[in-house]
Length: 290
Image (cartoon, rainbow, N blue to C red; front, side, top):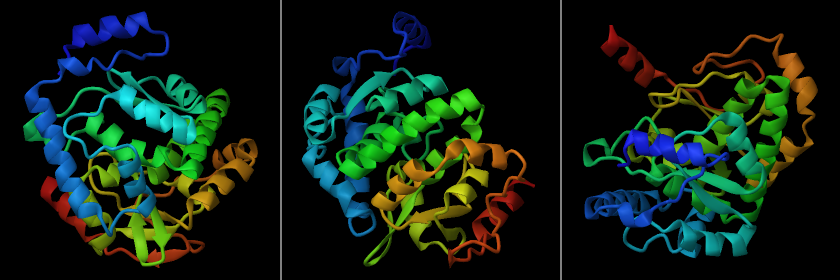
């Protein structure tokens, strides 16, 4: 892992917060951690994740041992969808992040978690960012959605509406489900990079599973450090892109300012409910804290 002082020095040199990946700095233990995480997730996701994700893994040749070199990923991504990965030392400011997405650049953390953090890490690392996010950037429609989100983020920043737009990212890019011919499938990076949440999101009776609605999503708070109490289900990537591009977000943001937020576990009369959750997990977690 890189030292904090080293991170700050590098950030100061780049206005866009990018840094070299410095692939040669990874240790054998770092590569072994990646390989362990990759093997576990790749094995359990088949039949659970959207097929386009697996197609991306194959096209990007991410099954090769060791942490991928960003340069190699970028050669294939650029040919497929015009996207590329850029390294950052950690989380970047919102407007910098949106600008990268708007120009088809995905910002990825370059550090990898320690072996004792293999099941949970609060800050996204290279496994979450590369394994979780990048395979779908090889899919044309999802790649267009990510760019549309970045352009929308730049506008939201000017309108003071980042909080509402952040909920859209959370409930789609990070924790989204999709309706498939064989039932619900995973696609959100926060789910597919997590062994436990990959099981919970599809199998556990605890969370709500609700049909995607843009306004509803933007009103809904989310949980950062536990499983989600509600997941939103898109019908297709084409529909997600259409809803995002067709919406007049300026008036929507203004309207949302006058509406109350919706709690992460709440249901509304207008919900297209796919599964009513028991919320048993959230109750157990709350009891454990008392």
